[in-house]
Image 1 (tube, rainbow, N blue to C red):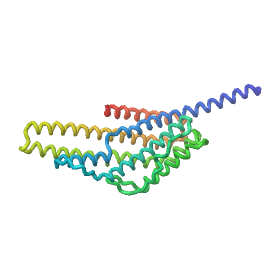
Image 2 (image 1 turned 90 degrees about the vertical axis):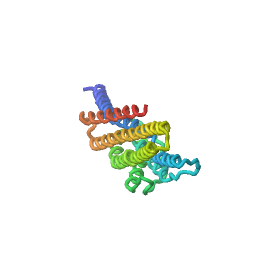
Image 3 (image 1 turned 30 degrees about the horizontal axis):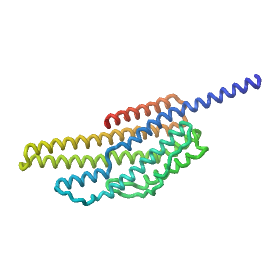
Image 4 (image 1 turned 180 degrees about the vertical axis):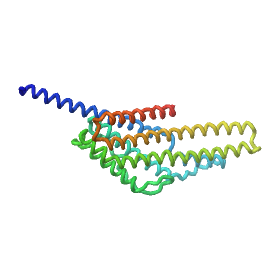
Length: 284
């Protein structure tokens, strides 16, 4: 075989290899892109620890028929929100990096928001321990390292494997914090307005018209709170699928050429997209 033909064969094999690698990473990219879109729904959530505290304070003022302008004491809840937000930034930053790397691009995530020092402790209903602090710190280091010129698709295996444990810790924290801690606060708020409404409807001092207005307002408040809870649970469902998908990706990152792995990544991406649609339906 002549040199020219050998060169053509070599180029064909090389092109086929590159094309195969890109195709394999496309399945990773589909999973990471849908995951990132789902994770960013955090920014649309209509509930927070601080808002729950402010609502409770306002309800007490209404019950006491006071228009006093004293500030509500919600500092611990503000801290809980700030920690939750930083964890969200870390998770979002990681999947932003995974999306870029699996697309053959450099990561370009801005780290300014993650430079705040994190400390463990109890902040209202939120407990933030050393495991979570270390996980956040490790994810920040991984994201920063992935921004270097030599850290492209060929290093995606190291990126995924190194991040698997800390990203699982952070996703679990974000999930529990929203679907358990914050959800429970909204449950307490429902109990408060139900008790208040019951007391008024059983009090003969109020007219039928006044009681009717109270009941009507009660159902509006209840519907609003339950919509917030549905958002939290739907977001939680997405986080759980993302975490399971990432574990599967980490376990099989060396087997991306296998059809069953490609199919599983496709299924995770499809499930996440379905949850995004479900979330959007609740919002609208």
